[in-house]
Image (cartoon, rainbow, N blue to C red; front, side):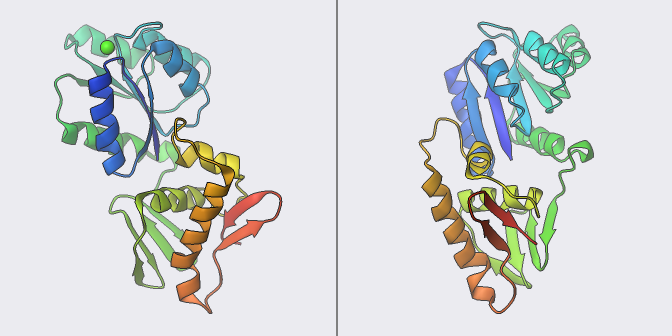
Length: 224
Ligand code: CA
């Protein structure tokens, strides 16, 4: 699950980022409205947390422009303003929810979970292929009724593969969705993570069929 945080106050941005990453979200941060709009318009995010008062473009303009561009990523507006009018305007421009500062991290997290679980995104809590199940709310993975322990990044990678099961995903697609844009990631890092995943979800379960397949020259897929 990838979240874009658009917030010009570095301290707030950093604390949201750290908190969400502990909850297994992948995050990118933009410190201006313009950068936020540029990143958001790639459509690569599952959720955008958007401050209203921003240098460059303000938050409402960012939201409005994204909706005009037919980018329907859920937007959670985060703002120090508590006036009702701002909330109404925010929701009118196509935002999905709002949270006024000061807020508790628990509340932010609950909103993030609710927004990313919405059925129109077809984001289900349980992702299943064959005898493998990943529970996105409990952060658990089981295969053939046996629990499998994964690192945070392995979990994100498996979640991404499962959300696109039976489809071929290139290394570039995987990098874009599973890693933050600022991390120095090379295509062979993806190979390393795929190898580790196989060691955990395929090899121990032989002779059950392998779930992760390499499609030479193209990428990877999970399931047939
Ligand atoms: Ca601000």
